[in-house]
Image 1 (spheres, rainbow, N blue to C red):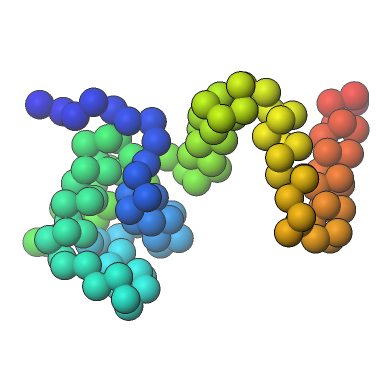
Image 2 (cartoon, rainbow, N blue to C red):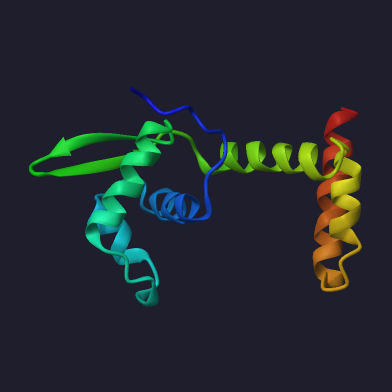
Length: 130
């Protein structure tokens, strides 16, 4: 029986997906080798996490000899959009302006970062107005 499809990843699943996105595709060992040394995850744990990701339809796999090669089933941009929409809905009353306001009010944001955000907004407004 297939698990209920989950739209969002747990922290450890996201950690594995980030490595798979960077690799393009990979085996359990490929992913584990990219994790920080202090993670020290057992091979069986890594295999379990990737199997769960496959059950949730985040990855597909193919056999290569005795190994399974895992391939991301959705790209990182798609997942970022989905996560941001979920965050906006749950934490910012589905008001994107509130989410952006919270981000822009962050004192840790540099002038350079604010300038980049302004440029992105300006470009989007220009593109939308034709």
